[in-house]
Length: 221
Image (cartoon, rainbow, N blue to C red):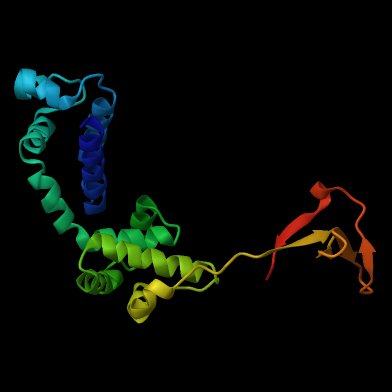
């Protein structure tokens, strides 16, 4: 139970950061670390000592203790569910930029400096949420298009997800093919002779006499 609740507290911290709330994320992460470090299960502590037992754990304040009690009683935390709903569109925009190599802090800085017009992405993110039906499915769709596009050095936008929606299941990252070289010259393997050959600039096949570790494998263009 400790790991499960700690994971939820970390998610709350992340959602608060996406929302732009200061200080609170640190408190939730601190509480999560405290839970992960407990030798006893939090449910047993609560059973024996009630909310006072939870509150007595170093790093867990009154407000978070109440949320832990709520989860132990009801199996969910209302505040967490509300945060997920409230930040749904921002979660999608944040995830989109994550696939572009920008973490949340970098995204915020870029938006602050007007390098990224954040509002430009909220409308298509909302449309994607409606199309996908959930944040998780929207993220999965972004990941699909991201993997497909990045493997081909193609740019992509949130709108690309709409264009590729009906073929998402067929989108696959481009297979990475590596070919062998020896000092810049291509090599071929002869299945008949069970030997490697180096093809020189004149096209002649020269029997490879080096070691296996001398072969350089390069990604084929």
